[in-house]
Length: 396
Image 1 (cartoon, helix red, strand yellow):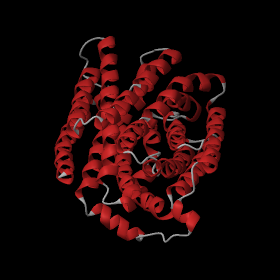
Image 2: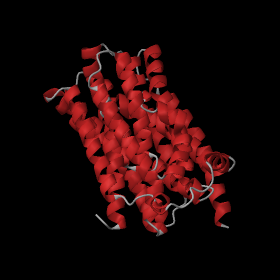
Image 3: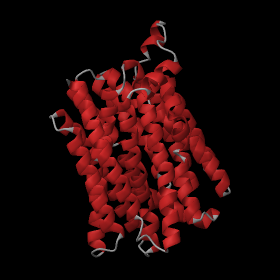
Image 4: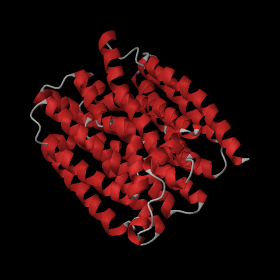
């Protein structure tokens, strides 16, 4: 695997394998409720706690990747992710599971955060890079869809503990592939100076408005997407649907998100404005959430609304990953900028599921949760306008 595109494909594959550890939990919540007594609100925190490291340390991890080299940081993250998954398989209480999910969260952050910087290093043509970043934006829905589909079957036949051990082994295999085929970080191989210090990189990032707008826009997207897709297995299981049907429907709802991510990369490469894609994404998510949770239409209409929510909503991360690379203050702050974006994205994913679970528990159902989605989308549209003005200013 010596070509730049081959290495880029491996980087995307690493992201997908890392996302397995996020997506493995939603189909496991009903199983964990029986095995460990996990409640609905505890399930919300289990969905969210993997984002705790990103919420607290995203920018710091980005600075480490810029300073030490993205390949090194990715390898460390994959190792921690494997250890966390194996330790989680041995948990005997919800509190222990929360701790191991926190460790997985740190590993997940370090594994995926350096990827956009590595892609930028490997791919030098802007159009090719835009398309690759669109594919990168799909790593989460692909990983989540795969585990949502396969998870119920694996948990039924192997048990959740054995399945999580298997995912730990797969993650170690990914680490070996990165070590074997991703070129070493240039300054590590040649002994070049490490460049500006970590505080200088952070100052450069946080004193420019672009990284802030991208990060806040990602926050408005990430929490609501994980809350809706993450609780689908719980909602459908409570409605009495079989595990096989629940797995297929949940996997499809997560998987169609990749269509928006990939389309965003191609549309941006062809000259479509980021504002247009972001408006379509947020607008469709708002409308889809209202149709899904407000009891409008039958079950078929509501499920089609979920698909639209996820598919067209995928335009948002596909666009924002490209803008994060484009609006970084310089080449020396790409990973720091992506880290800051990841930090606020993780904040959304940490607060979104527990907030929605709390609202559903207080309301006695899911019929008011759409209000959270609409509020996020209104703010997101405003941020999209700010981002369009920023990119227009830079292009002149």
